[in-house]
Image (cartoon, rainbow over the protein chains, first blue to last red):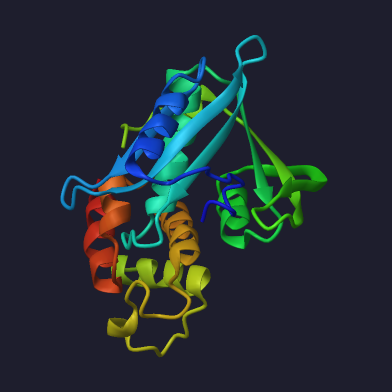
Length: 152
Length: 78
């Protein structure tokens, strides 16, 4: 999962995860929120925005949902909340995303959420085995009028 | 057209469901086309059909055709 998220963790023990979350929370102008079910409690994933360019009001957005999360539409809801929070809570006017060309589910999810592909970043990500992957760059303009509905 | 027919039309469009299918077979992750991505397509089709935006809890609860009809009946009434 980390490789598809284009992140190579140095460690995955509780302390390392806690530090990683702390760093995400310190992202200037960004946000990090955990997705959890009030019925089942365990975290199912997260949404994050960062890095953010506050002058341009743009930022990189990402969601991650555990494969064990079986609820229908959880990725879609996470994506909606990501865009709503970026627009309404952070005041951003555009989200961007970088996704590996072989991450078909994420590509579909982003396209269905209204992102468009800007282009391909060649050999942009190197995985833990040293293999390089092309990455698609996406953008999604955010209109505050889109996000009037009740918060998730 | 009844709510059930409108919901079925959305399923047909989103998940390539055939007209004569036993609708009790339409269950999230049991029916082959009804994947997480299929669910997004289905929600979009239902939102278009009923000209509405589904509430978060309704998206999460929509795990079968019968449940979808139950949920969309509320939207049709509003």
